[in-house]
Image 1 (cartoon, one colour):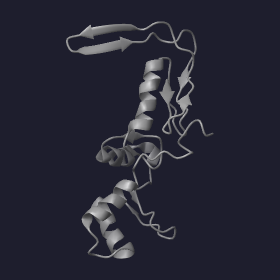
Image 2 (cartoon, helix red, strand yellow):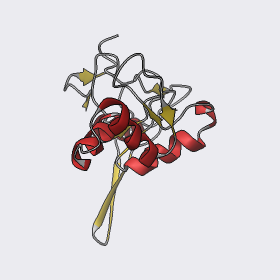
Image 3 (tube, helix red, strand yellow):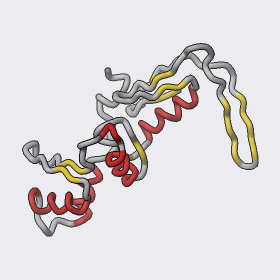
Length: 158
């Protein structure tokens, strides 16, 4: 069973035939046959175009959406290492013109930059005090990229 971020089941195409399990040394692998014919399984998360004809691959893919700590603020890309998200934003052609750090403290603030140090300096000088603890500023930066489930991210709340 595949579950969304809030624990509700996600429907996928019918289960293909029986799987075969193989064990080598200390690792167990389970191979699921591909769906026959032209059946394509699609990820139902918003802004995600992932498709496969293998149910296990879809389950693994969906688990990335729901179990990853960080998420790109511009698309469905997720990961557990924050610097991977930064690199994705900088290198992805679909994010041309976007900056890694966009200030969201006030709606009227349109400050955006790729440099984390300069972004933190902006936060201190424009929105907080210069002596604001580093840990607090780090939390604000991290919060920009947390993979927080919202109704818009749950494929069952369309």
